[in-house]
Image (cartoon, rainbow, N blue to C red):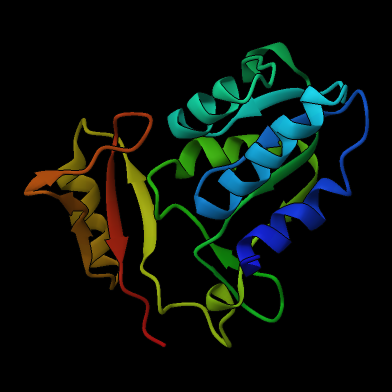
Length: 178
């Protein structure tokens, strides 16, 4: 069993009947969602709030009941992945493109568990670029302001095209000086 699978299994231990769960994004969170689906099949009663299109699709394919974030006042527990985590548990998230939704779900969560393997643990944040979601309207001005503030933003590109966030915004990756 991989470290990611072990982390996902451990996170399941924090889930109780009747909880509203934030369902995170990324490969390790996907292991959690699959394991959660097994528990739902065995009778666990939970409700999920997804942080991304991918998490929504995976949850639905594993028969996990979902509601929109607008239907809940708070979330009991969110389980999500991270791109980097330092010794003080600061992290960088958003490599997969769902950063704004992940942050909004986290902001109404009573508890958050980041499921990561040892490759995500760093002494100091900054090996992974810091993603910043930018609305498309006026994005050139936002990029200029980031540059004027001393950052060197670059719009994320995949397969030769601008990579949209799950909210259909742009993502600017900022290289941190470590």
